Image (cartoon, rainbow, N blue to C red; front, side):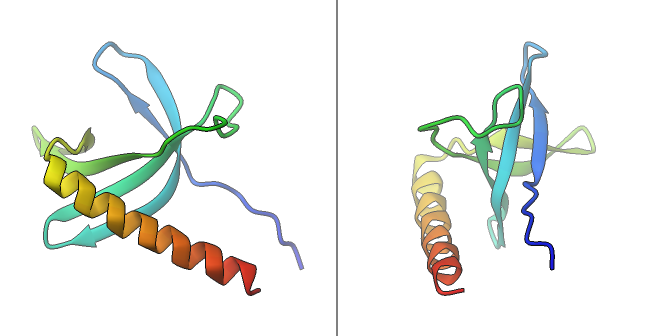
Length: 97
């Protein structure tokens, strides 16, 4: 049995055309939309030590789905609480296996 883990990676391009690599930690879809928790990776696709994760939402821009930072502080805190609760659940499940 192969227990290798392969991270789900995504590359985002900022407004200046710079590419940034992220690991997809989790995705939440609810009545408010679809939201991604992303952790930065470096050029070698390794996690950045002591990095914070970012929360992005899927928005429609000119008929194309793109990821944008969540700008509403209340929504951001609500999502952060939801993601962190899910991270704790996933972590505790992994400890028990």
